[in-house]
Image 1: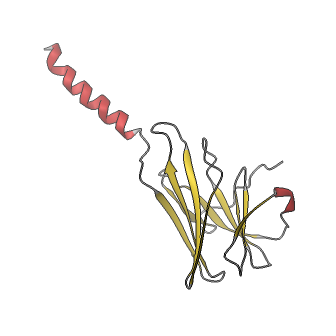
Image 2 (image 1 turned 90 degrees about the horizontal axis):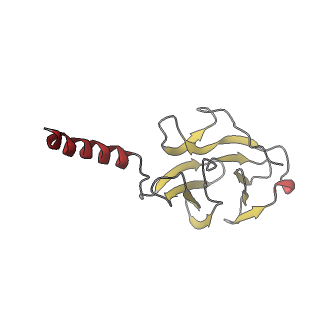
Length: 152
């Protein structure tokens, strides 16, 4: 009788193990910003089957083309959120816990900048983050309030 239950436990254990694994499929989170003239995508790719470790890739594109892609600082354990801001100068800012990127309004260029060089006055648009169901997506400011970073 004991031998009959063992395969069942094995199947249940395997199912639990597989549900705890990170998928190796890319998870894109997309936002269209017609006023700024861009579509932004931050794609999350698992780099470890069990731990919360992910590569993050930012891709921008205008309707007329002009694509640019850059790899962001990786998510090495629940630091993948990226806040998105619109600056009065017209540029966009993608801000993470450990990196800041400026998207030039006219040039289709993504620049890495120092936090201390960031000018105040930007408007929070939303976040690239996991939702309450742990799915990677873009959450507009209307769906979730700004969660600032402790940048020192």
